[in-house]
Image (cartoon, rainbow, N blue to C red; front, side, top):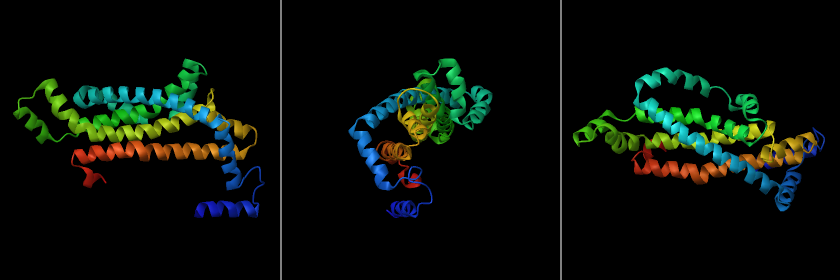
Length: 243
């Protein structure tokens, strides 16, 4: 509420022209009209389709590669430093390569989304596998588990909290990567609507889409991923230490 009052106050002072700094009411009216006409709804559906495809691929590849790196020291020593360095590269930097490799279409944007969440997912899974308590492993061995059965029954379940945290973070990174890809790429989506507003000098549309992007990220994390993570930590007896 305080931020809205501050926003309205700055609007009345007229530091910037109205077309550059619209009032909260103008942005709210743009949101209502956008959803009423179906434009924002269609843009959100397109964005979520790309997000879910890229996120699913990132999680699948990330867990697979992370398990290999966590279980085999030679693979970790060979690729661990590379993965760490790639994680520091913003996902949007990959977009020029994606546009060259996949042209200016859906595949390019999905590729950037995959890159956005992949490296974090690999590192979270690797850390989870490598961080399993040796006492748990020894207990599994004492129970007769060896080889793959030991990994399936003891190591992987013990690493699940780390993996779930990685999934939650990967979702946020994929969401950010998608918005960057849509802003520069093509195809109807929230990023493209935002760029249309900028090109037309319609700051109400720009701010409205920014609110949609921020609100969607907060709601999806709070309603879905945070609750899943909290439930996993509760079942694993880690709730008090984590939260």
